[in-house]
Amino acid sequence: MLRKTIPLLTLVLLLTSCAMYTSMMNADKNIRKLSIGMTEKEVIGVMGKEYEVISANSRNTVWGYKSYDDSIYMLYFEKGRLVEWEKEWLKVYPTPPRPHHPHPHS
Image (cartoon, rainbow, N blue to C red; front, side):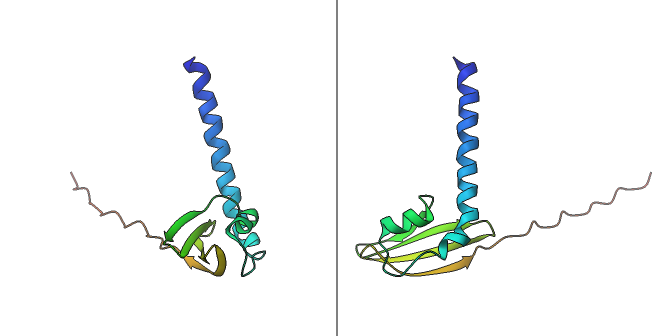
């Protein structure tokens, strides 16, 4: 049973990661299809279901759609309708240089 489960889980993870990557690649193209006043359901129809809820309260919601270029599209909804969106660049932290330890000469 375990021999069948591991390949199946591997396939599911691979397909899921491919879907997420495709969604990220399409974010730049799909964002151009949005219009102010669209409902949340209409936005999902254009952008897909791979969003993160950044913040929410009783009147406003902010969704984030990641893009492939280290950015995120922030979509702002009021009472379930799209009122604004913007692209924010995520901070990319460089890898700090490794300390150099000279080897003593023998």
